[in-house]
Amino acid sequence: MRNLVISILITFILLTNCNSAIAFDFAPEVGDIAPNFELEGFNKNIKSKKIWKLNDFQGNWLVIYFYPKDFTAGCTLEAKGFSELKKDFSKYNAEIVGISADNQDSHESFCSEKSINYTLLSDPEGIISDKYGSWIPPFSDRNTFLISPEGEISYRWISVLPINHAKEVLNLLKKKI
Image (tube, rainbow, N blue to C red; front, side, top):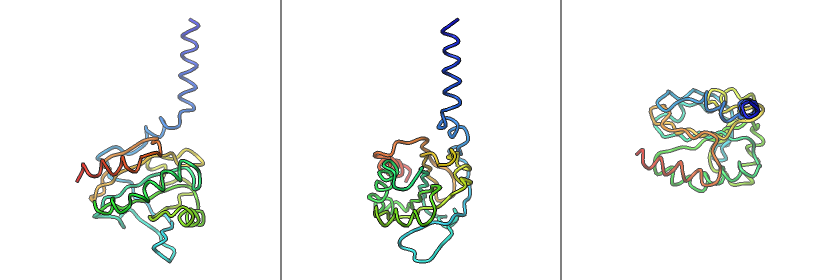
């Protein structure tokens, strides 16, 4: 009986504290139409303030990755991984977009200091992150979605580890083409 009580208690703790499992339940599935977005962001190659929408990337492969916070160790590692492989992604007609709750000024500093060479979008209320099953207030969970040129979820990674993640995404993209 004691083991049963302990098992139930452990299960309860895991279910109430395992945010990644919750995000997994609500993330769009492979084959679903990618949820639309309209967010402000920063790209060092575009001088004016811009609002990006999903259909701005129509006709291209799109890697959308959600991450918790600019300048943190894991997020910097993941962002730099995608930056280092941006030319390789471009060869496969793929764009990269990072989304977090950070504001546009934070993204601008992050891109400048860490040489991030693609678009980072600001989702301060987590509305878009939530649509992608990636919102654990007050941050986005580390999830990635590969969206086809037709706007469908082609693959998804839930609660990823940042090390070598960009290579993993690129390798899968190569297989899809």
